[in-house]
Image 1 (spheres, rainbow, N blue to C red):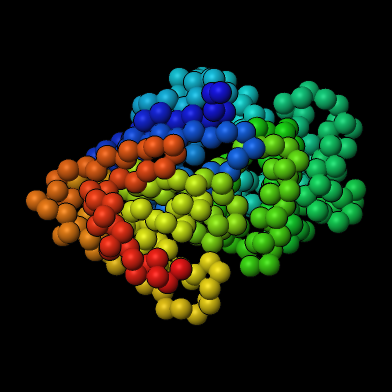
Image 2: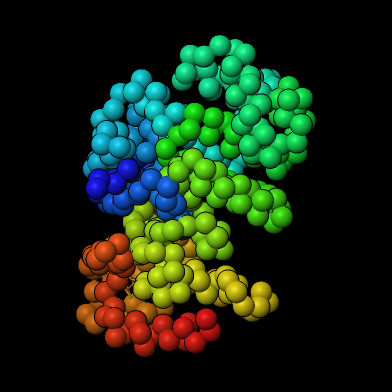
Length: 338
Ligand code: SF4
Ligand code: MG
């Protein structure tokens, strides 16, 4: 069967005063209905840009896109703005870290949800209001028939996030893109929102792309995981494969810099030294080589001269010049602590 969403060698380049920024440089993946793909990476890894590209929200004046984005068989890179406009908020929608940025302060929560519904269904105002109340109830807002008339500032942070989810799901989208939607919330509310998303996914069969820098969140929600570094995918696989048997030094570094998922939380963390690469002048060869503890293990200085290929077999792969034997050996310390 054809996957619901399919990216083929996506490239997103921005032209700036300083030159071309290769924000996404050859990315491919598939996503099935009802599944969650976690995309993890540091800021500047290209994860948000990828999703803005899917939604068609980039600025065409300074952006060039290549490759293919197929949503339910429809090619999106060549889609017109009005075609994309029809898809956004309807077949695909998005929730962000900052609910206040996607809710207008001047309109009631209910009016905003109702308007999103009316825009795509053309139903009556009364029907749209009823739908808004129903959605607020579904995302767990107490007394939705009165809170529907509240303004965003009258909601707590967690409730605003719920309202944004209600708005994103009001038209039963088949694809939901969630970009760090819980980062700004405290741990308890964060857990509630994650549970809500999982329940709604069960109910609606939505495909979700969940973007985060937090592997703990990935562990909670993802089916498959894609690890991005410097605009490229460096590793992918099922959640279990990536989190318990990392196959790339960068993923290993990310895992080592977070508390064990089921172990004690007070183990010392070892953040990866160095900072993310410039995408204006990215490092040659493997983009991770200036920060990689294992680069010297690869003979011939290959890491700094040759781009490692991402060979994917049955959804599993990593882009690294190390041999499997070397990785088994070098990653053994990690395995021992899990
Ligand atoms: Fe490290 Fe080289 Fe593998 Fe890149 S290709 S992750 S630099 S060992
Ligand atoms: Mg981002």
